[in-house]
Length: 381
Image 1 (tube, rainbow, N blue to C red):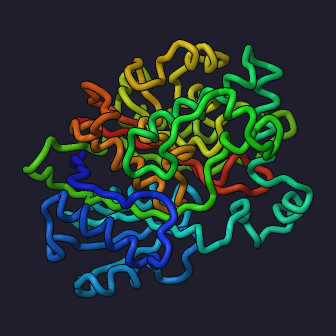
Image 2: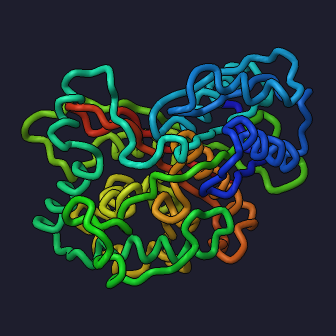
Image 3: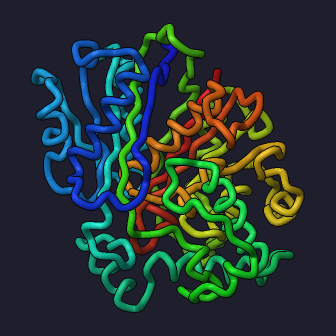
């Protein structure tokens, strides 16, 4: 199979970009990614724009002023997994020899929404009924957290420890929205959102940001080549009454396929960027990704293995909890972060000797399924 590479990448700082419109924010990331990869406009044969809430033909608006001459622009929306899905689709096009080099970027401007929970699917009566009954995503994850604490040997302090770890990492990341450390006591004392999840256990909803990568069949010559070892996107399966809400089935399924595709296993992974929209999510994904055996997420956390300097650092960027979660940009930004670690460019948060990295994004709250989509990528040098 043809090798596919990420030859360059960049992101904007995540946070409030007042007075900056979404196209301008995306252009900042795109130009830096092109410079990082050492490519020009003439080298890029197609563009994939990942966005959730920015409206129609946003990709064309973004590239209009960058001098691209009529190349295809694909607008990709797959909820929080949009950016990862954009890379997945780009890889397929490269494998099919449709293109040699393409640009994938994600952009979101959530400050324009005015705050509150991210809107759920509005075209489904069942989902609307769930939302009116209070079944928004913080409530869903709160139920998972309650069940987790009931069934597992865990405490509210273990949930809070995820926020502490990721805020500590975010303090080292100049691109993160939240750059202050916190304590378990401060996390538990912050405002209750949905018991047992407090404010500091939920990713911020007021954040703007963009990220971009150049994906190519050519390895490039300026730095250590980063290969896309596997790329998987799956959809949720209708849940049955007896399904376990702690199972994270969609992510476990995506991870199994990604490991098989790459010919690797969880023990080969050196660094992980995963979708920690809520603290409980990170613990569930430890098990779904095979980093911990079923029931062993808390012991893995307490061992220090997922901290910087541990066996498999998770969310060295600060994750969604600290770096922020501008929906369409998140999956691409995860890959930029992993690329930096694999190339030894992650600065104070560098994972020493990293050779294989994993990214995981879920997306979409709809009634009757775990999530609408989940994506897992493995990158390696």
